[in-house]
Length: 530
Image 1 (cartoon, one colour):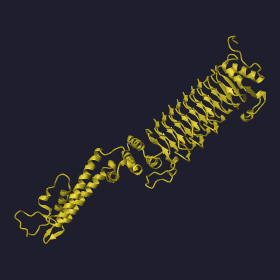
Image 2 (cartoon, helix red, strand yellow):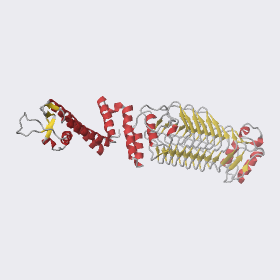
Image 3 (cartoon, rainbow, N blue to C red):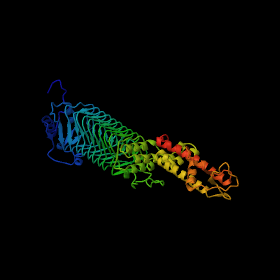
């Protein structure tokens, strides 16, 4: 040993501990002759099944000489005492397999080559500020801790490759199960088939401001928090996708069961959960979240009825809510646009215009312009239903309702053209009727214009049906004339003639208004993304 190197503190090594040192120098796995379960190891007093935590610390510091690059590899033992690696810069990696660490592990601000605790049992892992050159794996581990620090704490840690927690069971009865604010990984985070139970408003899994260099995989995970969010990941950033296929998520409270406020998903957001519950708040919070790939989210997760259409009578499951204002996505999958529209109308707490605009833009980009118009019409209906005060006074709200009925707020301009045709037909019908209403003997409310030389006692000449129809159109048209009134017109010297004239004036004013709205609708002048 180099004389300048510090001497090890432990010199009274047991036979097994000496074997651990020797195998670490050769890069072999040290294991006792007898096999026990991790639960049995946690309470065993057999010296052949135990190794002191202090020895592992000394080995990693290089106090027992050079070690093989393959690292310290130990299987099936109990680590006695807390494994304290705070601020340690390790010369090699540590791989503990099926080991019991009943006093937990601390490696705050340590620099490790790698750390593997697969199939291990431990009370906690506190690793704030940890740096690893390679992966941190705790697959199939059982971690049961208490306190607000979390059972597994990786705040501001930097994992040089993958964080593996697949099939792990992590439990904390008084705080988060995984507390990893500001975590950074250069590769993926895998928590497939994990069982995670936390407590409190911090969340069962807490990933605030974390940056995942690959996908975040929570497929088939069971995440539970009875007093706060299940997944609390505000401002999470992943360079790849988020996967939650067949996950079961139960949260509680106003912060939501799954909370991804301001998150950025660099690929698909696969939220194909099999169960999502929150007894006292939103199921999903996606305020200002962004996914660059498709959003896969079945509407039935929120609305078990799976309603396709819109209903004015609400939804029986309207207490199951989500928050999606500010959410952006390029495409929706696993749910139809009508189902998503149903969620926006009946399963959001307040009216926001952006979710409707986003859905309309997505449908428009897919070439479904008619769907996009239907979304925007529904947006205006929802605006009037939930925030009528935004439209102004009663008169303004009445105008908005009338505009919706006549022209669907400018998104169904053909309805205005139909209304124009109906009013013109009504004008023609009234004129035709006027030609058959007798005002006095041998005269009608509408008849041929008498020549200047005619006497007042001369009998009138009836107009033909074509002339009467033309007269109605002539008097109804806002602009332009047919010229029919030069030889067939209403007799305004009679009461009936004046009545028909007044009615046709009213129809002409209505036609003026409809024509103006039709032009505005076709040119898009009245379509406001309110």
